[in-house]
Length: 443
Image (cartoon, rainbow, N blue to C red; front, side, top):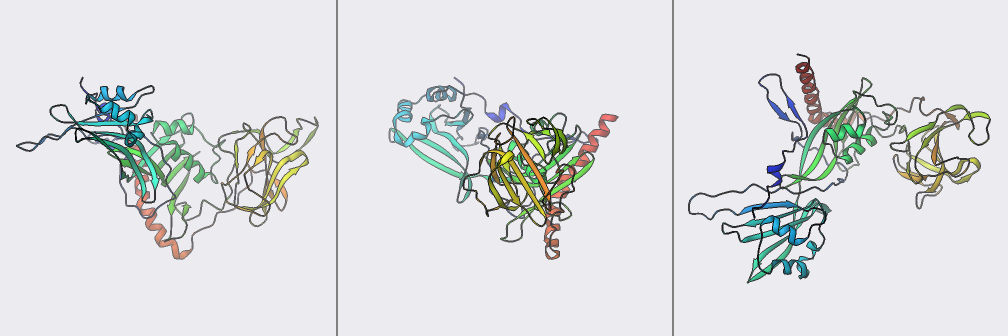
């Protein structure tokens, strides 16, 4: 039985191919490399299969390189199924793999992971590899781990091996036609990167109600590669989001050993302003202002905004602050009040429970988990009642001008502009290519 085609033969994987008007030249926007100025937060990982290199043949008297066969584990596969698809028929190998303690990592077959085999000209196995952990964090960084089995002394030997993943920088863009995640999927952007984009621009864009068809985003982000395949996703280096015709930007900047953060291209921090919402991807069920109270059945002023969400949905602090109150209060039920900076404070009501260990006087950071959606107090169903207060007076959080973000110190400006200069051309390139596509479509 011939081994099945390798993943490289079956699939041509690119993030985006863009057409130039002159000469019909194609550019793959997913693999433009840029110099890395600093290291963003620890990477988030999404494991995929590992691609093998195509077979190579050496001319002359030298020994020919082995043929590399590769297969992905399918749901319900056994070790025997994998060996048959790879064309590996070694006496005693199956018994070794299923009984020897040194080969114990192959006892657990994860659908989607890769098994490879190298075969010589006579079809004998040179080695067998099971990439059981395509991306994992160690002190040395992101590594891929696999089991390697080789013939040895009339039998077989098994050894666990690791190798460092290589960081690459990718650029990608998307256009919203129905939803943010739909646009990201179309552009082959990992979900982790999409979620991070929401976190970064959450103080500038309300992703619940502000998105419109035709909005565009362009991202420069890190990916981790092993054997030509992405095995992990890092963090966003820079991005641009055009929402309702207004452009928002962000770039990661870190000075020396100090903690880094995201700033817009003008140098204003994207942290320090309030997030527009405390829950990701929900819906507004009641707005600020006069309304018929759902329980008391009379007209009254609604001092906040209600966000409907399933019970247990995480609630995040919209800004840095100190826990001023945590406990139960009449109609609010389980409620947290944060004293933010200056004259600002925020309130989060009807929670089912609070974040473990959180207590009065604790400092919390913007985006930190503080509790979970519930229906305690005067509530007809699970939702978050969120209040934004100035001098202890509730104001409409959807209409108020949020506090201006902090800006970089003059001494840091030069280093910051050097970082912007690395990534801004990549984003501008995508914009020019988009203009070219529009012009071609109009011809």
